[in-house]
Length: 122
Image 1 (cartoon, rainbow, N blue to C red):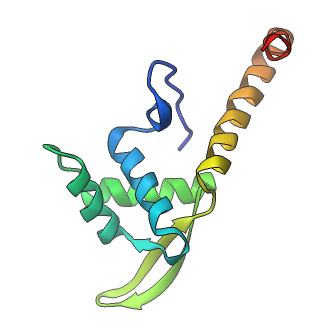
Image 2 (cartoon, rainbow, N blue to C red; image 1 turned 135 degrees about the horizontal axis):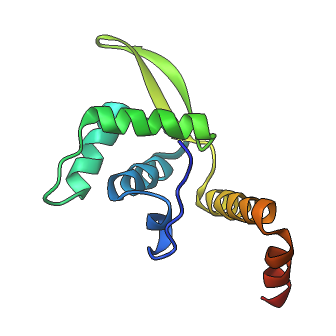
């Protein structure tokens, strides 16, 4: 999953859908103790009033964030077998720097001169 930037939105909504933003916030809240997908799914659906997100969507997003390098996980045994316990790899400030780095790198690749000019002028 590649982060998609929407400059019209504010805050984390610039790169996440509403349920994804709630997933990320919850994982930051639980920190290093982590959370299994079931707990994330329950919390996200509590926070999204009038909307329900499938557990599969939550699991797919959690795994995409692992692939993106934003989350990490370890496995624990539990009822029904092994469960991934997700935790943040980046805190909120580090994530924001990560997004800025991706944006700037992308702009430098396509518009190096103009990007340097804009950076200098700000």
